[in-house]
Every structure is written in C-alpha cells, then in structure tokens.
Image (cartoon, rainbow, N blue to C red):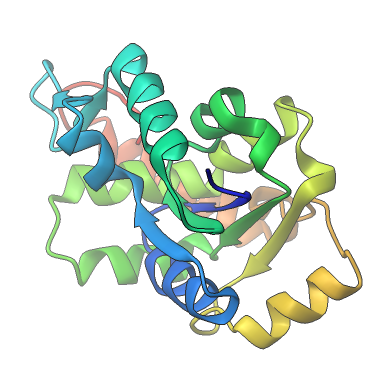
Length: 204
C-alpha cells in the first residue's frame, strides 16, 4: 500500500511531466502520468464531438485509481495530472501535497505551438490557463492550503525551489493572470475571438 501521493497539476505546457520525474527522483517515489494509467484501464475514450482530445469515463477512472493505489507496494507516488479533483476525491487521504504549475499565457501559447497541436487545441488550453481553470478547481475543492503554486514562465520548475517552499509550507494560490496585466486580457480576448472561428466551444 502506498504511504502518500503527491499531485502535480497544471495546464499542458507548464512542466508537469518534467517536475513529476524530478520530484519522484528526489523523494525516491514512482512517477506516473495518469493519462497512461487511464488508457490502460479503459477509462479514456475519444471525444465524441471530434475534438483532438480524449474524455475520461469517471467511473472507470475511479476504479483504475483505487486498484492501482491499493496494489502499489512502493512508499510514495508522484502523479502528473490534468484532473486533480479526480485523485483528491478518490484517494485524498493519501495526498498531503498538490503542486500547481502556472505559466503566463503569452509564453504558454509558444510552448504549445512547439508541440505541433492544432490551432484550436492550442487556443483552448491557453485560454484555460488565462482563466485559471485548474487553479479554480483546487480553490473550489478547498485544497488551496495544501497547494504550492510555482510559476514556470521563465523556465523549467526547480526542485530546489519546491523543497524550500515545502520546508516553509508556503502554500496558497495567488496567481490570477487577468488581474496581473491588462495586456493579458487583450491577448486572451483576441484568442477567444479566434476560437469562435472554429466549430464548437470547449475547454481542455
């Protein structure tokens, strides 16, 4: 049985995968991309609307998480996820820490463009970051006090900074992109108008 689980979350492009592996190495834990777990458990299906993404079947995802955690013999697990509430609501008793990665949307969009995604998918994810979608999910779940927020706008997340923040228990969610810089509002508005040219309107 696992002793504890660390959740690493954030919009695509903020550095979840990199930090998850580094944290797992630092604390001698298993590193897990939950999309791979859900795929193997049959909890991911193609989006029926035709979007360039997958949809989680929640009931299957919950069972997959429970089975995986119950059968895990290592001491700790570091999970990279776009769905922190799914883990927190399923195995929250094992989760002492959430790491939330953030990135200025104007920088994030460049990172996502480098992935070769469709323009619509890039815009959807950039807008999600601008509107603090994952951050709001954590706030609404009352998990802010166990969340360390790291800004990766200027580079890859550093384990040293994270450890320092853990030692001082410097938690809370403070970044609100649309209130930081009026230029981000203008930038996001342009993206919304551009997305309107595409068929449909969705988040991540």
